[in-house]
Image (tube, rainbow, N blue to C red; front, side, top):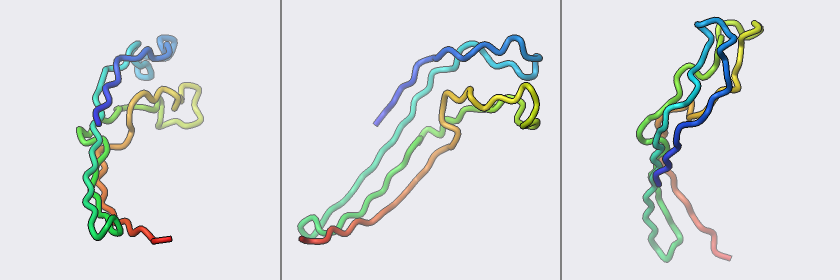
Length: 98
């Protein structure tokens, strides 16, 4: 699946010192997720392989003043995009018959 997220307004930080200001708008970005699976033996077994955030988009500098967690400019509320990069997974399912 593809999920496009358009530009978003970010709360005003212009009263902060220059080093602790963020832009007024976020950039737009695309998140791509995919999964494939294979079933066999009458849907009793299934193996799957998938990935999330396959384009590896991450927000940089999501926390303002992260080096001073108790300072007046610390702000962790301005997250608008994924903080974690690409994730690949594999799994196996076994369905119990009733």
